[in-house]
View (cartoon, rainbow, N blue to C red):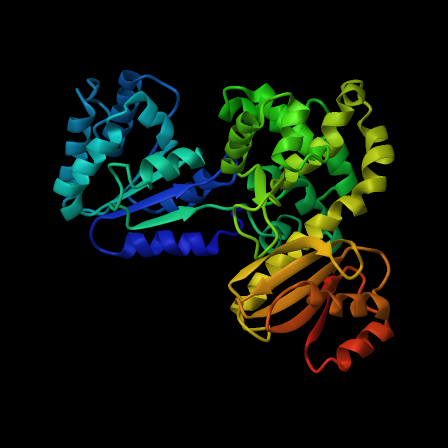
Length: 462
């Protein structure tokens, strides 16, 4: 069953229905569902879908030739094209009046085998494809390569695309559709464990409990997910052991470059380069308090990928026991007792997702265009303070708190939130409190007398 990706599919269909040459660049991290999306789109289309691999130029051209002949109904031809130029010239003639979708999946592999490919495509777009009906799609998992070598100003293909999509992980609202019979809390648990990566979400059985799935699909050493983070690092990086050490350090609480460098025993400038690569892969994220300049020393790094976060917190530290078949014991003693606490930051992310979604539908007192966290010094109380959500248009601010606890929120909690505005510097303030278990009467009374400045949102409302 194909789930989600409504906007992306609408974009693909709109481009396909638009006469003339179209050129889409689709990219995103591995496992995010690029090939599945394109395969679903290509059903019913006159499409040639070529998946590149780590072959040399000749082998790549031979494979492409065979696939091109089969698509054209010339499967009996055995002699491959002599060059990429002649192969694409053949395609150009076929697409002068006929709409054809050409997908070059894993394009970075093709560019590595044949470095001239981007220049060749640029020339063809300018002189052959541009006047025809080809719908060209370049797809790649190497985010940095696609942004630099395809979309970047120095790329031969710069300015030729008609659209681009950076495919993101599924939202919580989309990912919960994988488990329609589960409770909302278990759906959030699955999202917190697996993130929005479709290939990971498909590993869990919706007919089993979340506990059974974690034990059997993640804590069992023969399971697909058991060593997935390590396997992904091996696929993407030349020094996977070093990057594994960085992620272990970040999962253990190191959040600044100096701390990470100390943990892995490398100079700060070298550590920063490696950390930048993990940010590029969307495994780590770089974060600053909202409103603070990008050059600030307050920059921190955190695990962005939920599955990596869960794996480095619970699976990797337990590998010795798991290798002995103790998945059930690890779930009972280490995972289940800490799962509610682990899901706190996940709930914050879902709250931000809800904030953006309701922002689009006009549910808030004003339309904001920026959102993030804030942390810093509370001068009045002489201690560090944090704010889970600050959404702003530059003048007004919507200040929020997220509480993933098993008891309702009371009056004192919401009054403390109303005091947070003094830590910021905006002209006007509104407040929102998100809570797992809803709110007590005292909290509701404060909201009722706030003249619309305080919104209370329970998890059930989301």
